[in-house]
Length: 376
Image (cartoon, rainbow, N blue to C red; front, side, top):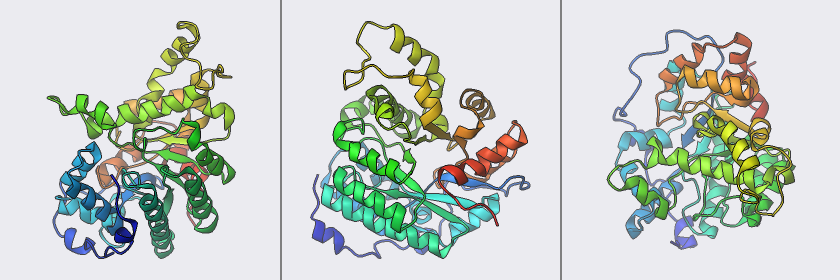
């Protein structure tokens, strides 16, 4: 699908009014405030949108282009309360944060970010979104940090935007929504993105999106397992594994990748991925470069990956990941506005871990990995 760049840039920035859309109560809204604050909470996967992004989704919807993300957004666009919360960063969001006892949102452009349109439109949209994000942070410097968008459709321009977003706009990290046009970042043509990210020491958050249409059909037909119930983690876990087996981390040993939703299931498979990589039929798991990895696959997970608690408010899962990855590689997140803030805050405040480790997960690791300003 392509979209006329001039038409896009001339589209009205007043497409949707957050105030009007936010009037209705959102489904699943938090019913009661958090019982009491215990830790400083920095939430690291908190979505926002801008009217120009919504216009892209509206245009995609009009084309009847049956991409799974377009189909999903056709549903979202009819949910006024959800759209209001995505577009509002000055009123209701702050009120919900206060109610839940959440100190900071690390904002990121909602999935699939800028990865639906053509390269020119996507590059322009990333620039606009990052400028807006910097303005949001400037208006609320103690409440917001932000992850910069970039357009993988044009890796060279993406690298330039990464440099601008981190060095000029002073954003806190990077966000990409898994595949782009069914292509994954292990393809060598995307390596300028990793070069730019490591040059500015910025972590890349790989956020889910729906799998490409050929794969999504098996998740949708009869069983309705697309999107967050199963399709997202399948898709993003695949992306992570492609990066590991491709040898990316041998080329970029300082590269930092963040996965949401308790690691998109990757931490649960460390033994099996090591065993199969070492013992399966000769050559089957060589990297795309034809070289054998320098280390075990699990070593890259433990050293180069960080995970968040977004959408996984389960203490058993938290304890498992704490044991496997350690407290320095887990960050608190909510997944606002798609999940409930009070529930997530209560989950973190009651975490059954040593207090010093909870302090790291609740805010300390975000302050380190995403350079979020500490309290005071």
